[in-house]
Image (cartoon, rainbow, N blue to C red; front, side, top):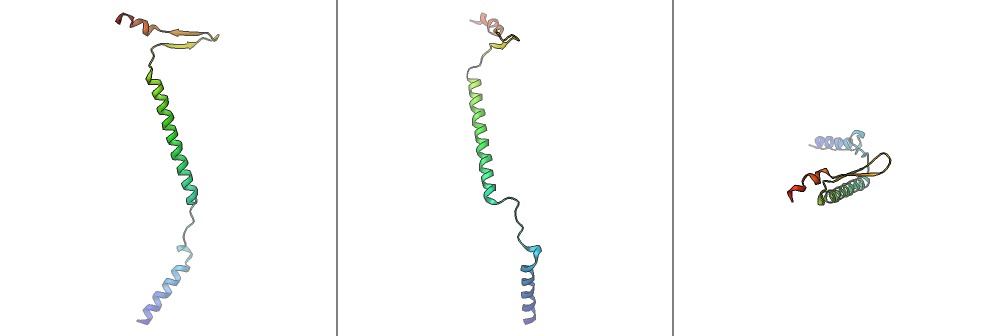
Length: 89
């Protein structure tokens, strides 16, 4: 029995001194990873909020009048769609 105990102790000592079993260092510290994750989540929340506000603004007052600019900078308005539905009134 004592020989088995000695053998077990020597194996335990070898396993702790073995360089292969040492804890591997991580590429990024945990603190930095948490900060990056929080930054990404807040950025995504800001993007969703911004997109929602733009979509609500665009869809709240739909318009069938198109406008544009000519090469010389003057503005022109195309309201053919509105005029085409004038007979519904």
